Length: 193
Image (cartoon, rainbow, N blue to C red; front, side):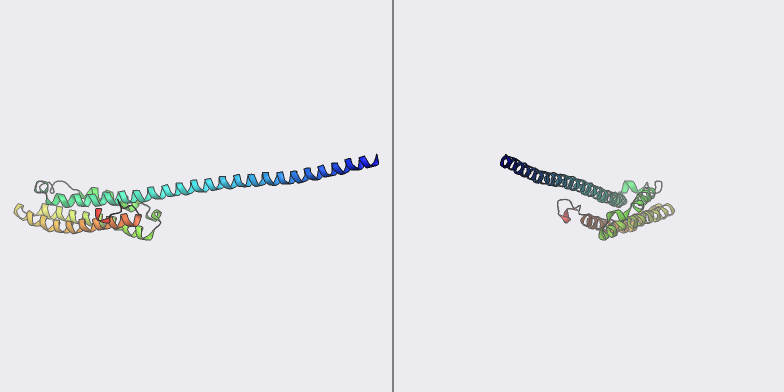
């Protein structure tokens, strides 16, 4: 009897030891599984935060480009209008300089530091100055046309048209440089702009 009790005691000890080992392995497996799950959740959260940050950066760059396009378009429109004989008669009565100043205020209130890139900030900063210059040219034109006699007005328009043409061309170059610095070039062809 003593021998069979010893076998059962030994067997029980082995079963207990194997159970303890299995419990340790099981606990380790559960802990590793929980750790992997936690790591995957953290990685997903980081990836989501990164995508959100990328979307925000793209939205900011797009907003900056849209404001610059608005400025460039307004300058181009004034340049085109200065060449239009029919429109010239309205200069003495209608002032476009206010709309330029409104756009200039939008440009200057844009949080330029949100672009996060010095070259993009430099390129963007050219547009408020271009609009201010366009407004000055146009205000001077208005004053000159309103005070000039009818026969002298064509020469005045030609003079201011040349100034606006130079500003229009420079603004288009700046717009192309801004697109490039923001990484928002269309079709990758800088000549397309």
